[in-house]
Length: 126
Image (cartoon, rainbow, N blue to C red; front, side, top):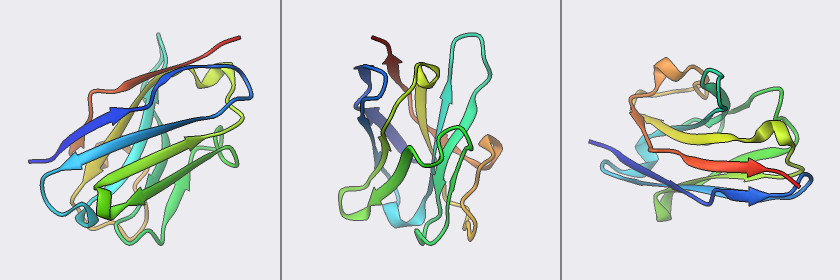
């Protein structure tokens, strides 16, 4: 069993920065491919960013490319989402997700992930 706990959400002004963290427990963290998804009110959950187990493959939604960065620290069992130049449309609940399935290419589909965190709220407002 894999347990994921997100943190770091909150209120940030447009153009500001925020770093989300997701701590994992269970099998060795290096065994997981990790992803970030988000869900805004009244909208479906959407892909944000992902990283393969090897860290050689990353993927980003077009809407966040160049502004958000996914990274991981296997020693701390944690994956991060650095959010820069945030916009009001980034307001959402952000979820991290994990899969133990070997992923040469970072998985971008929610259906590829087996474990999910409870989410952390990000509000972008002036």
